Length: 166
Image (cartoon, rainbow, N blue to C red):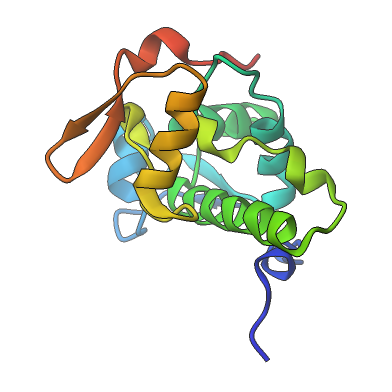
């Protein structure tokens, strides 16, 4: 039987895991852009470490996958956090939130404003429930200006709204 989105959020026993960054890692390019070099320690985490970050983004503020990764890396005292794993969990969290809401269940997940979590450079996430269009509507409802960039959408002046996490 196929797992629900909520079941996919369950912690994996092998995580968190600290590895040394290698060039053949799927997240290498993204990590390298964040200043992480080959051989630097990086962490792969469970969704349970991402959920509280996403849940605490206040109305009027935004966060990117990169900002979440920086926070997690600091917590684990390493140079970086795997943005691929983090991105997959962010998408899973968003879908779990909508799944719980659709079922009418009582859950702390329903309080997570996942639409305030953006991809790099303020781009919307096409893998969220309802795709970019649904995320665009939720962001515009909160007063953000969203502009088309080819087939993608981006929050205008996104950097002005980034929530800085200590």
